[in-house]
Length: 262
Image (cartoon, rainbow, N blue to C red; front, side, top):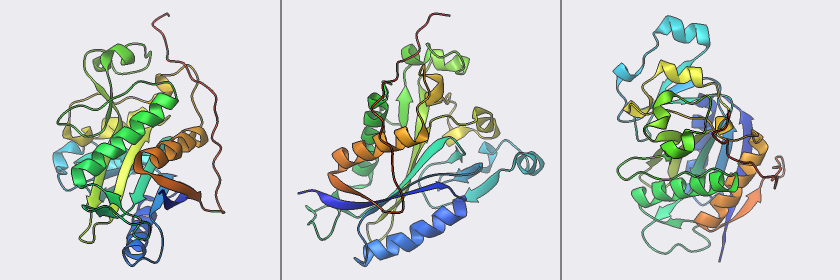
């Protein structure tokens, strides 16, 4: 039996606003006052550091960040540093995890921390496949990756992407003492890649790529959002209930990979 899920599509909102909202909603979910909730949104230019964050991975000084309008937040998710900005789909699932089989009333997902992260990766891989891009996981690493043979078709990707896997989606989550998830993922759709120069992303020397640079036609954020909701529903086994105040256009148009022709 599918479980209900409240999906909130919030548009562009400040990072602190979203963080405060997660705190409020997670408490309500833990008390059984609202169903599991998925927040989908974009942020203004922001660098966030997780629990493994290292100051040396912040490459822009305060003056440079001020000129570019970048905020910095140290937060309680897993991982090191990442970038959020316009043109990036950010998702914060706020759902209960349980080692036992959940009931419909609980609304939980049967998974541990690692299993939950793998499910998020699978959801993003499925989303990108629906948009026409082949991606995958890498053992020992978190996130979603594009292999060099695929990235080699990209005219605007970093040269290193033709030699090693490139990250297209980052994941950093927290599971609180009540088993409720917070934080989530960030998928590069059509974001300004210059801002990645301000950090050593996730503490890894790995190229970062944009969905828009790997397809002939750039899908709209609405389309990517719709595909993600679809995939999340299937991977996690939820019924999607989109709040009445918001709507999603789930386009069925196809997008082809860039080829190697000039």
